[in-house]
Amino acid sequence: MSYELIAALMFSTMMLMLLTGQRVFGAIGFVAVVAALLLWGDRGGFDLGFSAAIKLMKWYPLLTLPMFIFMGYILSESKIADDLYRMFHVWMGGLRGGLAIGTIGLMVLVSAMNGLSVAGMAIGATIALPELLKRNYDKLMVTGVIQAGSSLGILVPPSVVLVLYAMIARQPVGQLWLAGAVPGLMMAALFVAYIAIRCRLNPSLGPTIDRSELEGITRGEKYRLLLAGLLPLGIFAVMMVPFVNGWTSLVESSAIGAIAALVAAVLKGRMSWRVLETTMRQTLGITCMFMWIILAALAFGAVFDGLGAVKAIEGLFTERLGLNPWVILILMQLSFIVMGTFLDDTAMLVIVAPLYVPLVGALGFDLVWYGVLYTITCQIAYMTPPFGYNLFLMRAMAPPEITIRDIYRSIIPFVGVMIVALALVMAFPEIALWLPGVIYDN
Image 1: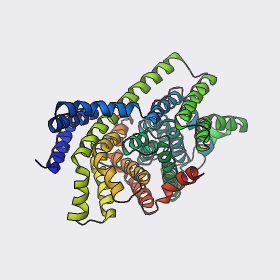
Image 2: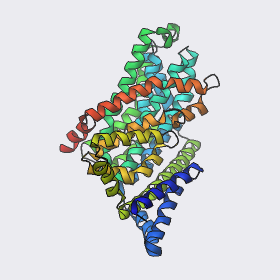
Image 3: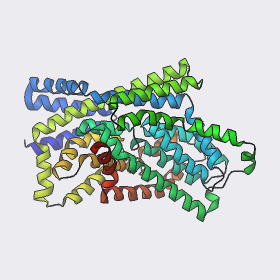
Image 4: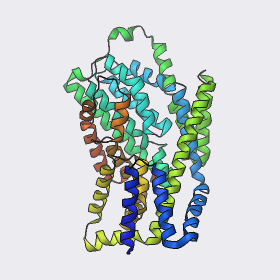
């Protein structure tokens, strides 16, 4: 049996197991170990899983993962995110579409707190959505705003997805985070511009809030809300400034962020045993999930390295089919969008990373830049019907008056904006690579 056929059999078996509802790490790890046993016998099969586990445990930057998840859940469970939305409500409610624009700002700050899109979706659906609907905002507009804004969680640092990509692609986490910062803010700015233009052309989509709501708020109260709302931004600065200046390592900065979030919750009187217990449970559960997925991905990738499947795929595209490297890159991005209709971002990455990451490097593209492209494409896949991940999260959290048809319709313009952002980053790689170059050159 040829190596190409073995690789195809491994992929088809893995996809079949995923379609039957098996856990991602179980399906990928099982296929990897069974393939190793069949190819190299008992010793090779057992050594494969063991060496992958040792490699995972020796990867020091992985310690950042539980730190950032802990930081995000402390700020979320202690209701500090509520202060953020109240700040945007008071400061931007007088503008057309101001609360929708404020919701995008909320999502950017939540992303900087948590690094996961699920947290942004939960906060947006429970805090922002009821307020926006109560103030007669168009339901299609606000549903799209929350879905698009929450997707920023996997791009804006400290993105947990980019940590996973860094492990699999063997790239520096710090550079990937910095590479995601400018594209993430650019995408948020494009969302804001779209909302502002739509609400200018059609004011009924995002009416201003009643002035009577703002008249009772004193200037001092406004500034107090501003300080309270910017607290997470301050925590992010306390964490990232030492790292960017080279005073601390990435792991040390993540510990500073976790401690700062805990201290902030205590000083605001929001810390309780319930908050701490919930945060610890969520942190442990998500961290273990990611570690199992990384372990399975390393084992799967090791089999592919041994088979030489990457060289075979590269030869197929470049020699037999004669495709241009950019055409190959675009086809890879399209495959992510197709897979995103039934898989989440981590599953997509660990399934195709053993092939795509070495292939991207062989084609001469920058792997840090490609990590940003992958992440933006995952954002688009999250929101692409019929089975986009974010679509079903929104359906589970939205009130009954928002139907699945509304959810599908609401994301169309925002997917268009995200495609524009993806095209800009592809056409101008410096959008992603400029900040890492400036920081690391210094």
